[in-house]
Image (tube, rainbow, N blue to C red; front, side, top):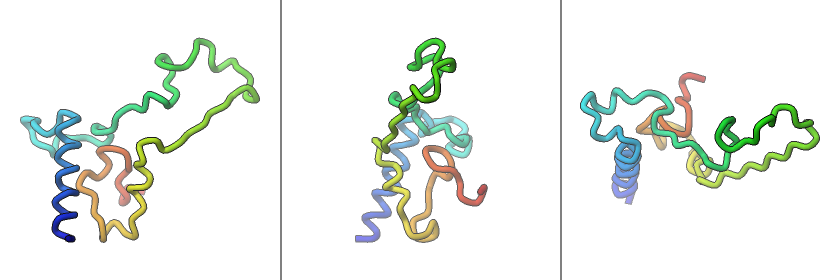
Length: 101
């Protein structure tokens, strides 16, 4: 069963690289930079995309920002140690490389 989970882990990693156009990079996956595999969240506020003009001038008491982990990425981070469940893409997608911090 553990071998099957490792295969699934590797399959998810390859699927991530393929979906973000890094799976067939002529320079290889080592050319992938930190954050290259992360997708922008359409629900998160992005100036110039989904925030109204003059949003900075709105009084702070009128702000309401509700955030949920709708991609369930934080749930995937709940592992006991990185040595037990090592990341195949350190810092490429949603989580930073632990050794940096």
